[in-house]
Length: 82
Image (tube, rainbow, N blue to C red):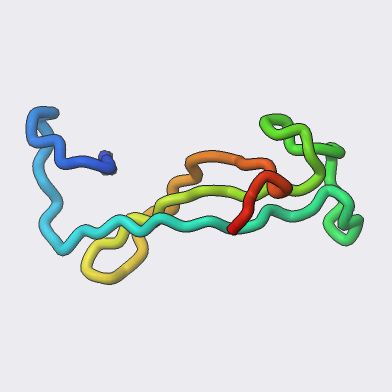
């Protein structure tokens, strides 16, 4: 089992996986539910109640190799200003 955390957790009792670990934050746009090329099975993203949204995520790197992408939050695309 590999436990990934935003903060160091030496108290949880697992052996540390050595390497140069880094976390990068990112944002991306989800597929629009209005784009019928993808044949969406629902009309709106449930957490934001809109047809398109943005997704916050974190990428965990070990020695400059992406090991895991962690989706964090779906955000209303229309509410984003940047």
